[in-house]
Each structure stands twice: as C-alpha cells, then as structure tokens.
Amino acid sequence: MTRFISCREFLAKKQKQKKYQNCLVRMLDRDEYEHMSFRLRENTDFDNFNNVFCQQLLDSCLFSHFIITDEEGITIFLYGDIEL
Image 1 (tube, rainbow, N blue to C red):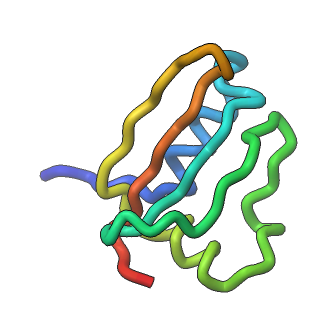
Image 2: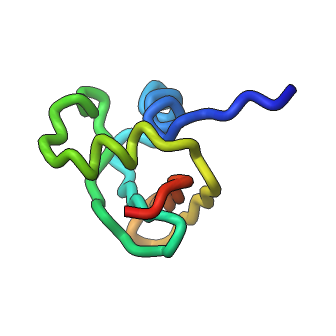
C-alpha cells in the first residue's frame, strides 16, 4: 500500500539536509496557482505560517514536485493535492 506524504512532511525532510537550507520553496495547488513562496531555513517553523490557506496547503498530500538548480540556487516546486 502506498503511503502518501504531506507537503509539510516533505519539507521537514528537506529542511534537515544542508543542501536544501536557504533554497526557495514555491507552493502551488492543483490548479497551478502559487499560494506562497519562502526560503527554507534550518529554523523555519511551518506552524508559524499565519494564513489558514498556507496551513491547508502544507497539510495537503504532496501531489507532485520538482527541483531545479540554476544560477540563483535551488528552487523546490511543490504541488499540493488541493484546490484553494
């Protein structure tokens, strides 16, 4: 049986890896609407994001993701399985 992972769990795992600290995270819903972007830091506390929609997106199942590296650094695109 496949276990689904939330966007929050995915980011928490990446946050522990030094390579991804200070990378840009862009979070989108299934309609590809970007709801938030932020820098992932070692001390980023996802519970402190004060917008209820941000919390819903963080708690949604990770629908898809991709990571790009370019001259500006690493960017993680996360798609939550939710329509906000």
